[in-house]
Length: 285
Image: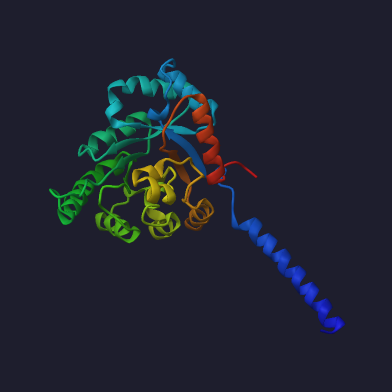
């Protein structure tokens, strides 16, 4: 190699290294101001606190909101009053596979929420795949105009119900219903058992309305049992958060991300908040 070529080589190498550093710095982004952090309200485990004090605790810990189960509506006046008193919003309700979707829509509207989390039935020996598809397509389609009129989204979650087992199938299910009020409540951890979250995110794209945040370990799945895979803290499993963040950036995701993990008191909830900040890059950099 001549002296000139060596000089050119060094210069080119320095340029390449510099570009690589820039690429590494810009490959991951902060979602500060784009993702709002929440927990399921039933995760707050402190019997010494009133409902309003629990709302205040979540606000103090940096959460932007919470989400309630529809089965908790016997105390709905108390929850609404606590939300209004603390300024911590109830962003939606969890209806699971309760067929009363309109009632859940009413409850979400009452709280000032924007969504109803829907689980589209369950496939088993008694309920065939195609029958479940037809039943829940029709059920959600019938409720969609009512939800739309009230400004509420019906978001179908990917859960372990032996149904909608791939992102392509989930996308088809939503597209067949074909209504602006219907989308996906994407649970990041639920797909790790049989897939990769970032692939689901890219395929589902604009259909994703909100996120559930949990973790899953393939090592625990293989060595301790299927459900044991969830026994790992957010950020310590196999969700692949850098790839998840990149996929979320690509689809332009902005909205709620709600933790769905074992809860506890102040210390436990603070740890969950910090872990969500880390994996979702919520804090400004």
